[in-house]
Image (tube, rainbow, N blue to C red; front, top):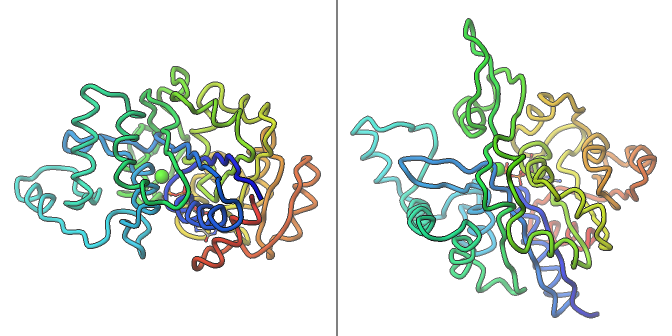
Length: 320
Ligand code: GDP
Ligand code: CA
């Protein structure tokens, strides 16, 4: 078989795990392939004056073998000296965990952003993390323009107000009632250099099992993205992040509830209906394939739990 040009959209943990399977499948079955990852940057935030890109870093650390495996994000063998010193000074926030090793990445990024675009900075960081991936792989931020996911919440007795998605997710564990999810800056955002090209020239475009509302959602909302995905000659194939009516890990159901979408594999496919050609659901959701097919999307069921390298590679191989 000849090599494939594969383009994948990516959030954080779910996407990064899946992408390891994509790399393994391509390396074995499609030598000569190249992978382009378009990463979500709407989770980005500034902490202690540092520019943190949680989803880009999760992809880099995971593919580069530096991730904390059990957690799925952050660095392995991490220490927290800097953050505990900051706590002694009373510096907030303390609800977002930033380890020492991780902080080095944010320092490099923040420093470089003084003179370079986020794309260029990500390319520089990728030289460390993606160089040893067995398939030539590049990571592009969805946009070089600032976009931030905010959640409009209502605290007891207080008026509705917007907080950064990370504050709602990490600090409040998505427990604070959310009225609305807003992508601040999205109308002005332009796709980063190379993003539209990577979609137009791909042999296949993959939508990993990522949070549909706050990971894939923002990427699709960058002006021009949906059109590019709808018009590329490449098939666009997604993997359901919902198995048996629940997100496998995490609290994606809280996000779906906020936008009024059912927590089902078919409802998530519906969110992507205008761009999707194929959709993988778990065997427990095999009944949903008819509903998905009714949307004009080819659907198939298989085990979708990424429990180890073998199962993840099988899911990726099927998607490809
Ligand atoms: P985040 O940005 O770190 O939250 O990560 P993503 O948005 O990329 O992915 C989170 C989503 O991945 C979760 O909401 C789950 O629905 C999904 N997910 C996690 N593990 C698995 C798995 O083993 N199988 C499937 N199908 N989905 C998973
Ligand atoms: Ca994320």
